[in-house]
Amino acid sequence: MPYQYLYHILAFLVSAIIVLWSTPIVKKIGLKSGRVDRPGERKVHKRPMVRLGGVSIFLGTITALLFVWLSGGFIDANGQVLNPKDEYEIWGVTLGGIGFFLIGLADDLFSLSALKRLLMQIGVSSIVWMAGVQIEFLTVPSLGLTNIGWLSLPITVIWLVGMANAINWIDGLDGLAAGVSGIAAVVMLIVSLAMHQPAAALIAAALAGGALGFLRYNFNPAQIFMGDGGAYFIGFTLAGVGVIGLVKTTAVTSVLLPYLILAVPILDMSAVILDRLRNGKSPFIADKRHLHHRLLEAGLSHRFAVLFIYSLTLWVGSLALAFSLPSGVIYAMGATSLLGYASWKVWRHAR
Image 1: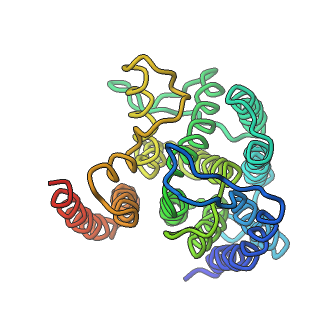
Image 2: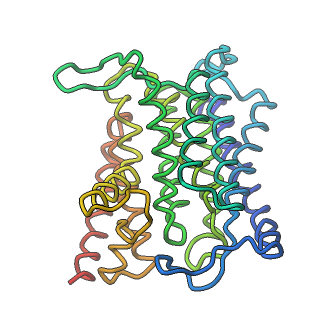
């Protein structure tokens, strides 16, 4: 193992330890201050739950990145210090994540309107774009890899804002968003390293440690929720890593990989929006049209529904590994077998 990969292990462990240590403290503060998510018609939980767990995920991820940076871990694939442009992109994603976290935290504390949140998210994403976090290529049918020129700004903003909200929308069952995000972050970590983007992989490693560490308190039955602050931070950071770690390369497969890795939340959000529009409803009005709601209606237990969506996320992630690693086909075959078994179990329950 190249020595620089030790920094990725360090980022993962530091983030996970901070989250495991700080989450009970955040929960206690949330209970004392009354910052709880109360049961409702479209909500699954039956008792008030603290929804500030994103504070712990944020603290763990940022602390891990600062620790690695101070340790000299921001290096390129050759073990050399990052050039200013690449380091600027790393801090662009990090500072953008802070901005999205603050937007979500403000919503958790003060219940902002959807329009205010959207405008602030667009503003932060535009600033991040100016910092160099830019989608510059897209794969166009019959044209192949195409430089998109001035369309880079709106497409990047749509990607960053869309993914932040996609993770927030799937945060409807205990452990669902944290587990899906943790799996996606681990896959992005591996793929970024395979694409010789170790600096972007550091962010993925820190985020993976925070999200998976949070599962200790968030898996069913959950003790605390991540809230909008955590979901926005995770979604934006995953999208940002996809841009600076994968989309920045000019290979066709690399450009497609982040969309494949995050296919589950992307398709869930897209299907819900189309379904709402088809029924003449606003795409921003919450309802029970998400995949996890439909799995519960089919008779699956809370945990089984979450585990099935985990298997879906692992499967699409394994396809990304198959495209980027020589041995990735083996992982894809294993994940396909797991998904097949889970699908068979779902079919039996649905019948």
